[in-house]
Length: 484
Image (cartoon, rainbow, N blue to C red):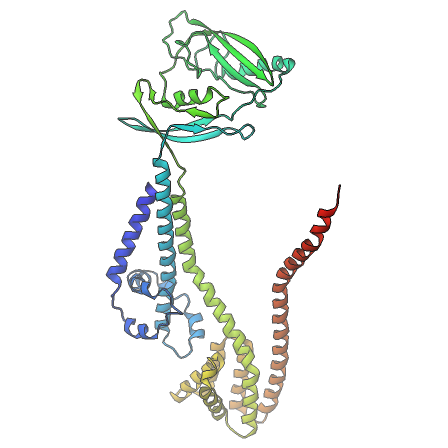
């Protein structure tokens, strides 16, 4: 029931927040809305709530978390306003977590309703396990007119009559007596509840008990009568059955104390311990003269499911950073592939007598003419560098920043070559660029081979599975045809 309340309350709160924040206005909302692609942002409908959470909690109270991904985002979004993309990236992470939370609450509500329906079904009987399946435990809710009580009933497995060994039964008597006495020291001083076991430790012997004075001790072994100072004598008779043989084991007891009147737990357990040869156990309609009803106390999964779902929703918020790292790896791989081409063009323009700046302008202009072929990070960084130069930043400083922003060894090396050219002139630049291009081509070839090996390794698993299946198809008919 708690799971149903929790799930329904959570859904109502989320629905109200979605409705209230659906038209929520923020600084970037109008500009961002026109840029957002539904394919890239499938949870766009949730962004109103995400923007509100972002403004109220993340931006103000979690500044370190909010700006944690800045360096990575700057590499992915060259020449862009990083504030917008940081805000949008965080909102996307929040949207993913909210979506998971909504799914968890809906599924949890369904599970809770189903469990509540099962628990609400009135029971008139419970079932034993078949022989060999062991004891079955039932959690029941006993509801009377005035109150209800959760009880646990252990239903022993259904027994079958089997051949008995007299010698084994005689050997088991001392062990059985010790178990029956329980916390009592001996048969002459019984003041605590007897443990009227129904089988031995090895579960080989079936035991049934009879008490000559049921007004003193009930069938569960509980003392139910006030005992005077002299005490009371009771004869406990056990019928020990092993296979087809049954022997009678009489135990004289001297009672010196008493217990309280039957509890619901003891009474139902008493009934469950009787008639072990019956598959069905009839539950009592009255206990101690009071009407009572039983309901299945289902082990609820909804609460556990919600807890796991909440953990998953939090985890997916941080898992989005993995996608960011994956995009950074793609960026690095793309820039490494473009490196020899950029070196080649610089070498060509340098040979034509152009300055570094003019050469870079030609390279960027050619890229922009073919922009429909795709977004290339290396060329975008060059364009950013040219814009910095045009805005008045020193060429040497702009090229140095280019290498740092790229964050890749080969581009840092290129920036150093270009800086040396600015300091010393173009005499040695052609040689340095030619050497760098040769190294870049070798590096690209090695990288391609490495990627090919990785792909081959990934395909190895499916190939092994296909081989096993093929061998099974060939070998199985041969094995089935062998006559043993």
